[in-house]
Image 1 (spheres, rainbow, N blue to C red):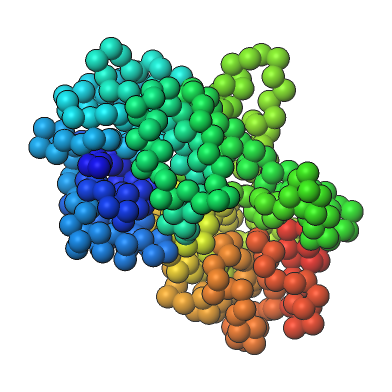
Image 2 (image 1 turned 180 degrees about the vertical axis):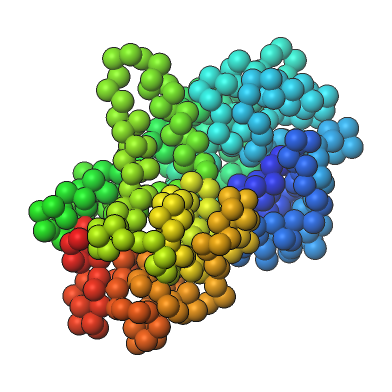
Length: 427
């Protein structure tokens, strides 16, 4: 098949590479308002595990081509896949009008976030049939998620388009993959429902972690007890300093708008978001209490800034809240992150924090002269560090672990004061 993928984001680049990998001829482009260069080798998403190699291989083999923007007359296609676009009814209608000029097109698949009912409103007579397939790939494992999906939700009400979709995705279907076919509107809502459930589980466990600190209980044993129940499972029950990222936050905003539309709703998902925003400052509050509010002029080391490991993004990440809180108190921050240094530097300059924040070339450089180490993102290189080097460089052996990657008893044996989220010493 000839497929045009619109959207040079992680979802678009990954899906385009995977479609090409199974033999399709794929064009990857963007909309005019998202204009990008032909060369995507320096795109931040290309850091995702294995993606750069797959993209380059498909380009070399002639199955994947890159073009700056959509051109249906020059590049007609059997299917269009939309992974990124402006979120408005006018933008949807304009895109559908443009694609309608391609008389060879059999359908349009949307994978980006769409308001519930958005496609029903945008699609008019004369437009190509549409389908909605919510994409749940995770940064750092996008290729694996696309090639080996646990589930595939297909919102489609056109028989011919559905057959093409089933043909397109058949190479990725495994014995454990659950395929669910539903209406377009139901698929749109399913995306938000999944995001809301994941966010709820994270905030729920963070609330339990905060309560466990009051009770002097180790949240780790509680987490294992909860996760061992087969009705619950252990996914997304790890306490920490909150979730970040652009897409999950946007999905939650969409569904809380729907929640707020009905006056008698209790506002559960609004509370989930509030809990998460408060949790992002939990390390700041621990440090504040430890130093009795006397933070001005102190230096702190921070390991991690990206909203999750293997990412270069800081969208809605806890590091943003921590930077704002600590800089307001006149704290000096030495930050090291192996993936988001450029993004972080840009944020620091744009917000006028150059006098308070330095970015470091390696994790141990960040420790020099610091009163404490704060772990914010659980990159693999932080899991088994040189503890002697940490003690040597810090002014005192003090660690605040926002991701609970270290064991409190072992840290105590190594001579550290250790404060986790619902674990270690209480402050």
